[in-house]
Image (tube, rainbow, N blue to C red; front, side, top):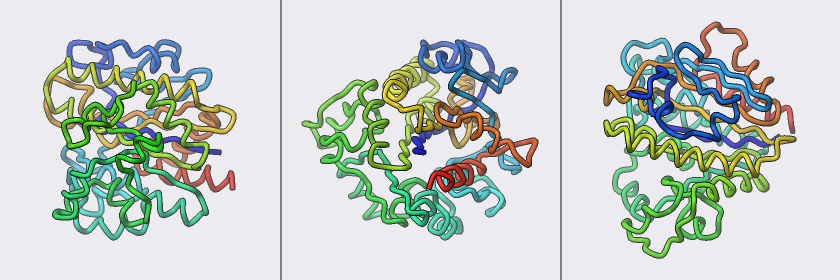
Length: 310
C-alpha cells in the first residue's frame, strides 16, 4: 500500500450556497465525479462513490475559538491534539511548546521508524531558505517536521527534474521569485507528477496553501480559480493513481474558503476525502471509537494501514 496525501489549507464543509461557497460556484468536475456528482455540504457531510468515500472531521478539537493552522496542523500531522496541549488555538506557526511534540511524533519520523520511504513534494525557492535561516521559528508544521526528521526540502533542481511540485501547481509564481527559467506546467501534469512519486515512496505529502489564502482574500473569483486549479490537478492524480495499491487522502486543518461571507477561519468540519485502495476501510478506521471524529485521527490511521502493508 502507498499513500498520497493532499493537504488543502483552510477548507471546510460549508453551506450549499454558490453565493458564499466557491465549491458550489466553480466547475469542479473531477471532484464531483468521485462522488456521483455530489459535493459535501453542512446538510450532506458524508458521501459515497464507487471508489471514494468522504467523511467529516472535527477541526475544533474540543477547544473554544476559531481553529488555527499551528495547532490544527500539529493535530493532523502528529496525532496529538495541539490545541488541547496549549489550551487554545494558535497559528499560523506552531506554538513553542508544540515543537518537541512535532519533533518526536510528526508523521514523517514515525513512518521512517517503520522503514517507510517518505516525501514532502513541495518545492521551495531560494528566498524561502534565506528566510528560514534568519527566522527559523516562523515556519509551518510541515516544514518543521521535515527539518526535524531529515526529510529533504525540495528546491528548483527538484522541480526541474519532476521530483517536486510548486505550491502554486504550475510554477508560474517562481518567475517573480528570482527563478525566471523554471518551466511552467499545467495543474493536470502536476497531478500526474504527484502520483508518479508513489513509484519510489510509500508516503507522499503535498501542501496546497492557496485555498486558505483565497479564503482570507474575500474574492470569490480568486477562491473559485484556486479550487478549479486544484480540480485539474486532481484529474491528473486520479488518471495516474493505481487504485489496486494506492490510497489518496484529501483533507484540511480548519475551515475558511467554504464561507466567503467572512475573511476568518470557521468552525466547520473539514473533509476527509478518500479515493482508491481500501478507502472504505480507512474511513471506517477513522470513525472507530468516537461519535465525533477529529483531525488528530488521520496520522494514526495512516500509520496503521502502512504498518499493515509492511
